[in-house]
Image (cartoon, rainbow, N blue to C red):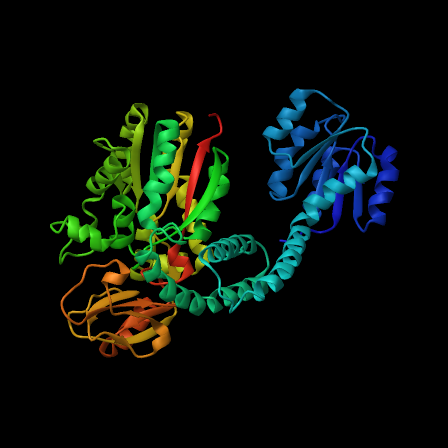
Length: 521
């Protein structure tokens, strides 16, 4: 709602403020003046005002006594206390009842103008500045389209785009948001080509110039914190996109100093592969070789049944000692309450404590299954809002507060992100092909259109266990989701507009990993 450029100034010495009134009117504001609270309430009942300037010490009712009645008439009107009193008690009372600003007389006209401008036009001024900054930066970013970026440049670019996505989500920036979305989509083909060219080389030459991958998270980010502090809370939030992370940062920054790095999820960018790689420090091929009993022809959920054992094994090798790390997987409110009950004991012991939160992944999958979630989280902006609302009242936030209270550093990351999918891609395969929508293993597997994804013939070169003869992997690129010719309409209707993962977009592959250091520490 745009409020009018009108000011109601309530002060028993209003005539002495004529110079202030004249100055404000010269700046384009209409100023209505009254000397007592009853007349002010009558004026407010007749018409809305942009701002109310309210004296505290007037004959009859004090200014603070009028606040409740003013809010009852117009709950959203900004209120500014302008008073001679310098008593801290009055200032604290004004802050307590949520006055929008507080000025002590004598005030000069420009002080009043500054406050009124901020309250009435601050949002518009900030939006104009944001739009101007984005347009200038967007021109620079456009020059990078089609260029051959290295892994570091991809991280910098994608992280910056996520920040712009969050900034532009507020206010009336529809055109700029569409331009940003179009630009992000235009990068998908370049990123798929980059991954197809680079990923096998990263695995073949692990000591070469490659990004941190899922297998490096514990060794490169977690163990240094453990060595330097002797204790760390390791939190993995399943399926957390970079833009969702940007949305959570302001709340986290109230408790912790934040140092953000990034890594690349292994492929497929899906929980059975990427999260196992984090906890084991191994690629799926290596897990299958070392623990064949844990990695066979199982469903996706059972493939993640041994995360705690894999982490203990990895930490034991990295630290050269036997480990028994407390590990909690939180998939429901009751899981969260139980984990929070045990968390103080874990943190008091020191070492590593692990919490895995599945809510965002459940939300992402559930959105495709339930109409109400599909409507509530209709796009990336709505999904971010829902994520932040959950986070502010979640077991995750309470766990962070407990860690901050006990001066325990936190390493927070995710296993992969997700992509908003709109384009069905027809695939052909034998009946035993896997059912995943963003990646498929199968015999004689192929996509109708080559640009829909990356076809992997040599599974070993991509760190994956070999399967029976003829089995290939197809990884979705862009916003494609895989459908079969026989179920084309059913899958289109069911999954178009879903947030999915497992493919090769920056939104799925480039992940945040944040060191949170308690501010009191």
